[in-house]
Length: 428
RNA sequence: GGUGGGGUUCCCGAGUGGUCAAAGGGAACAGACUGUAAAUCUGUCGGCGACGCCUUCGGAGGUUCAAAUCCUCCCCCCACCA
Image 1: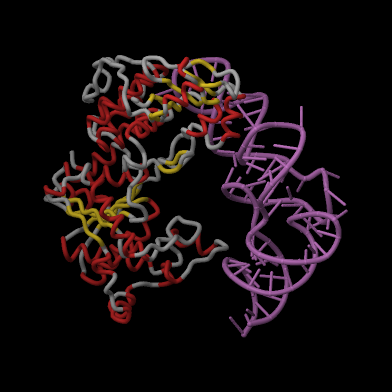
Image 2 (image 1 turned 30 degrees about the vertical axis):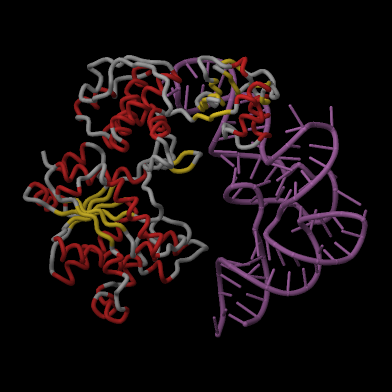
């Protein structure tokens, strides 16, 4: 089975150009393929996981993945699929962000074994306007461009489309051409909103070099609730452990919607499909175990196995241990017998002994340790019965949390069902 | 550059002198129900030790007992015209 089939089977493919030729290409010798990543932040988030995983699949199949950081295009801003103009980045930001992104990609693809990272700032920033127009601008038809879906939304919007953004397609096409020349890269992959840009690159390669190139787009992954994957009320779920802790990351995956579990297992883990397909028949508590495995595998990929085990144990500690049958997704290396263990993956605050001796009103404390956004919010939460000490409901908003509540040298506070916070006393 | 229309609480969007912390919807949060799910129902949804006080309606001034609402200047967005 070649990569294309693997990707298809696992739900990565929305659309491809030249189905048959692409199939042949990928069945043959090593192919270089690239995906662009926007350096809008120093970290990637779950929304980029589909492209990342697809590169990983490529490498596993013996091909060469090229991760292109859009250091140059990031200076312009891609209008595709967006309703308003993006904040423009400075070159310095972009370079910093590119560093962070590389480190994260390295967990999924191996730069020591052929994978390449490039930054298009290297060839875009020095472009000469007139030369560029003469050499490449003439290959682009404005008539065609304005018909592209990627521009239509903005063309029809009140915001309009600025000229700088209109150029984006040319720059991305030029990237593809550059990588074609430099690496013989014949395949570009990207989100479905990139279709127009990818096709523009393929055209440019044909017109300018007479070469053939191909494209693959990924579907936009939405949850069954219809929301774009990877967004939560707290914002994006980041791959950077400083932004989204491994425990939170794990929890994000555990909270996957029922209907999404098999699909997400296929996309976001490397577990074999025949095992994943069996998950489709599960429901209820059994399905929850599959979610646990999904979370474990996804966390292992992003943060390493130790962190994943830590997150799993922390979850067991908070929500109760489980044991996972050995025939469920057997390829997973998840520890099958759950050991609940006090873990510091749970946010912890160290308190002065003196304050706890005196007692701190619950609403004040909940605000202070960020279980609530403000004292007012804490009052409301507690008033509605959503606050707990050691899993017992706090009955009044000004109940004083004190040493009386100390159990095993800690006090576990909880807001709602899932937000825990641990309080310990300073040693003195 | 001209003319007209706009900028409201997380988002959309009402509100054109007091009854406005500001309708309605969405999102979000809590409770019940559950499987750390979804759906549903109920409640909450600017801040504050809080039946009161304080800060919000693009920005800065002004009129008035009283302004999101009226006036002046400025900034930004949009449409049409040039």
